[in-house]
Image 1 (tube, protein in one colour):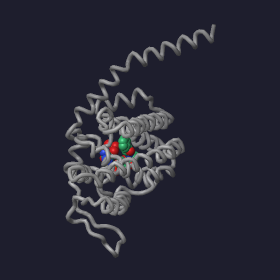
Image 2: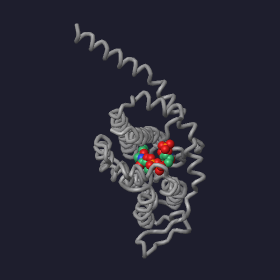
Image 3: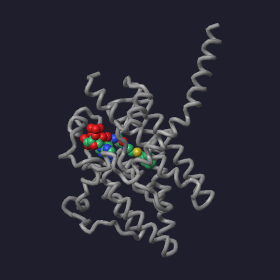
Image 4: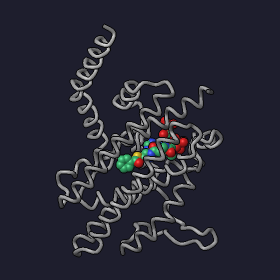
Length: 287
Ligand code: BYC
């Protein structure tokens, strides 16, 4: 396997894994505050799914020769990236709807083509991830539907969540193709099957009619159907904000990293106990 192909895959898959794990935090934050037992059970299951996605992805990355410990160390030291989207706070219950609808919606748009990525273990992990993400997207949209059809205050909350999550969701697809250092090579190697801009356009085209159905307004005054291209034209993304969040300056970036480091330290005794148990069994078997 060419070394650069291995490096690129390890980078992308491990960042993807970190995103799933850090991505549990904004929603995990609402499990105890979900408005009903049904909503709580659904949200718990969704957050557990994200943990599962992180684990499949770490396993896929490990097949390329980097250990789980090395990847986690890179996350905790701030060397490895994870998706910018998880550095924004979840202020109200409507944010949980908006995350499912928009963030998981954007994730599916990006991950469906990755089921055909050129590296088998990554492609196979994506098959199950996409099935689960599709449930996540629907549960988010269903929360938005309930709020949009609820009281005036609930509809206002839904609109406010859309206003705050719309632009960060568009940033999830990465920089414009012209400024994306990795896209051209990753397309040649068939790691990426569609470019950042192609996927972002598809996401806008699918999502705008969903906002219309909710009776909510996408916060972009430049949004306009373009008959000729058969898609929407949309306003300029604030790339300065994107790069600032990538640099670790997102609104809740420090809180997110602290939560991950604390979880790692608090779980040390579990890892030690599991290793001791395994060593005991191995010794018994050998005896
Ligand atoms: N955030 O050359 P580019 C989820 C970085 S989790 C942070 O275009 P590439 C979910 C990029 O890494 C969804 N960094 O890069 C979980 C690169 O830096 P390095 C996560 C970003 O790799 C819980 C630099 O900018 N999905 O679904 O060709 C709850 C230049 O970019 C971002 C994945 O990870 C960003 N948004 O394309 C709910 C999908 N964008 O590494 C939901 C797999 C770019 O050179 N990943 N950067 O230092 C990919 O498809 C690609 O890696 C990307 C970026 C499209 C994200």
